[in-house]
Image (tube, rainbow, N blue to C red; front, top):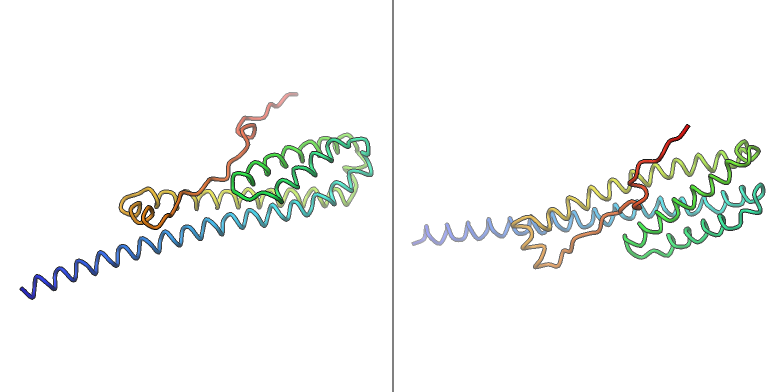
Length: 184
């Protein structure tokens, strides 16, 4: 009889240890998702901080391109006011498009392209875009691990019991998925 009680206690302890491990893994992954998103947020903030300087530099050469400046400013504001991954993703895509327009305007001004401030700002933006890309990749990889853990058995039982909800991926704009046309 004592052996049976010891076996039952050992089984209960093993189950408890497994449940605690699964719960802690879910908490760890959830926090990694938050950290991944905050890394994206840091880079988006850096980019939005660079944009006013870039606009002021370009304005001196292309004062009549008011619509492009307003579009960039609006997109920058949308990123700063985003409160969810989906909103930030959409605002990021909007800003990327607006920056493409801004650089297209800059192409029409050879003196601007040679301006040291413009070149430095363009390089900083390129570097920031690379960091944003890396941060999005890290975030999405972490979301994948977290969502898998939330859906796989037996961790899905713990996830549902403790309200661990799936996280949203940081998605590219639909136009970014298409291959660009190259014409000579």
